[in-house]
Image 1 (spheres, one colour):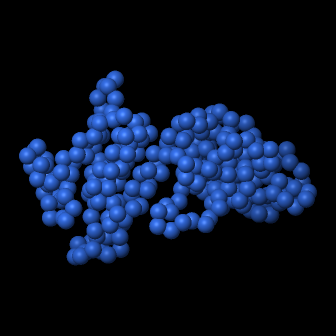
Image 2 (image 1 turned 90 degrees about the horizontal axis):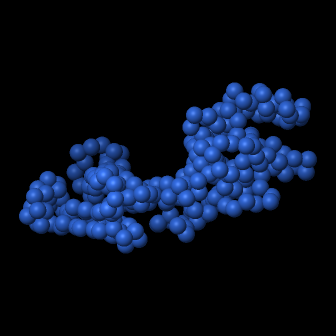
Image 3 (image 1 turned 180 degrees about the horizontal axis):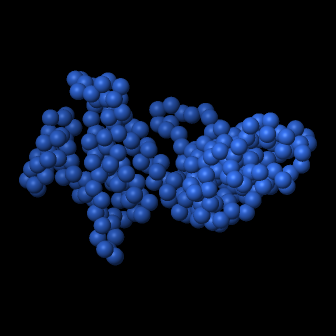
Length: 265
């Protein structure tokens, strides 16, 4: 992945601001190791180390010295996900020893929190960066990040630009990249090959329905994933409240998730 969304995780930087991850039950123990000024500042800000919260502590020059981050010990991923957008735009590193599992969740949370959908309007938001924590499996984090971004991009694209053909093109891109096989059954051929339900759902549309069959790999047990990929214009007669119809583009989320899993695998 080469877009800017992959750049919020970076190699080690000498001037990175330390992040101190603490759960609510660890906070008081940590404060006992700090000076009176830090303890007073933490208390004055009402910081309780609730997951997803943070407290910036200045150094003697008035610059950002470190940031205390509240985390959920059981699932630290989401405690980090909001930080790229909310922290001052600097480079940070985890300043305490954490387990490999924590390092990986921190990296993934940070990466997922940096997602932007900028196909139609470029984002000017600059985000904070995180030095890869020691122990994180970078390949696995990158694979999960890229797969998740693919799913989000597909779901966020409006139906005008995400029809059956475009969904098939997304599958073709994966097949071309990873050496798989792709078979697409289109229009009336669906009836000939005994897919009447798919044909019935899409036959009234101007864009022909299709079955997208993607295959990869020859070893191990055969696993088949099926994802619903209904893509349509939500204009016309609203059988649901208009506010609900706005989100009906998500009806192809099942197919998007299958493509995301395929990309990750």
